[in-house]
Image (tube, rainbow over all chains, first blue to last red; front, side, top):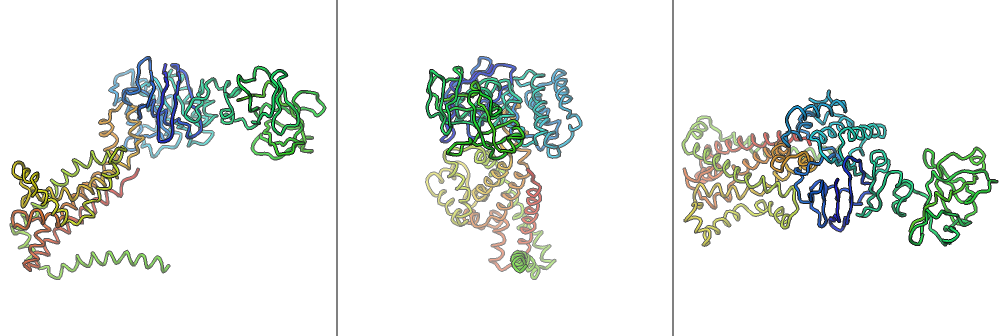
Length: 348
Length: 257
């Protein structure tokens, strides 16, 4: 178990933390956040490349925030992979074993197993500059895992790959992580990547951990408006007035009040209401259901994503929709949708 | 096309200038005189003295430049900007001024003590080495720093996560990758030390068979109007210098990172 306790750092004007975080052994974690959120600074603290200004890092119960990089025993897959250009693939793979003085059959067999699992055996005598993007990834992954690190840190290593190859390497990384039983922490700004690779996601915004949970928890219930925006909510509206007893809210620009559920009511005064594009549902105009809205088609923005406008609204108010409208709606450019009450989230 | 032609022409003026200067030596070149001057004990002494002093000054300069250049390349610390600026100090100060500053230092109480109790520098071999060392140190550090700048820091930090200590990283990652730049820095520093004149003559004087390096020998032969011997000495210096430049260029040109 890795525990971060009130960890803080300063980099120029930027302040990271205080960060409290627990990474249970064997699990796969993601530290997800926009650029400039402090992910790289936190990574440097974990690796030991920079000292924290306050707080503790405990690994297996031992305080390690001043332990030198090489004594921590963490594996690292940097953004640009950092394969040693003057060494061939095999020497790259063995670098960690040599540096740590790990010899003998067990280590050889382990390395061989990693080489077989990633299919890089034909590359051993090649120089890094002759490898393709995917091959370089595999080599860097095996090199990081060869000395059997207890914690593997990944710093957006897949960002330079094309989408198909990325997915392939996500699967490979995930299966190796499970096979090795290594605790993994992926640093990324890519939501899809975090959801594909992590059991638990820690959302970091402006130097602080905003939320942590399983991918499903974060997907369904972001902690606040900023987190929701970052986690892909596009339909976020300001609450004009509300009534706690009747569980009704009026949103700015909406013709009628909407009904919400008690479960989604926040502990403090709600200011924002959000719903995922996937959760808006097309219905027949005559259906009598709560939270019904009439919308006008505006434009199509991407595969499976449409923007619709509130039909009678005075000001332009866009709603993002996913899902297929009926032929008639497409023809008349007019449709009826409902906002299911249990899917309407309220934030302070 | 006129624009391109004119700029290329300007580039060829350089070749014409330096090439012409070297070729014009041939006018005074007499084979018999060449052989006589080349084999005279005084010339051989100058060559040996120059090679020894330049080599020693280069080794001393690199001994300091490698750690200092690494620090300037890798770390931000108080005073690093000032030190970085001072690297160009020997280049902007006239060699005569630099030599005079050394002389003035050896005439103050601290300098006198050093001369009396440790090493005699003024008008001595040690003075030649010290002067060359002072002259080339700045440029040596600058070149060594550039060589280290070429090695991405990420490679070093990754090596450390793989279990290598800072010393091991330096030996197995940084130095091998900076090797060509470092060798080039050595050659260029050495060539600069070899050709040093202004500061050396100020500190070491013009004593035949004692402090007569190749550039000083050229000056002394010219003073006595011994043109053929001057030509021979210039040719020796030019040959060594150009060989060093081409070697350094070849090494630097092959750096790929």
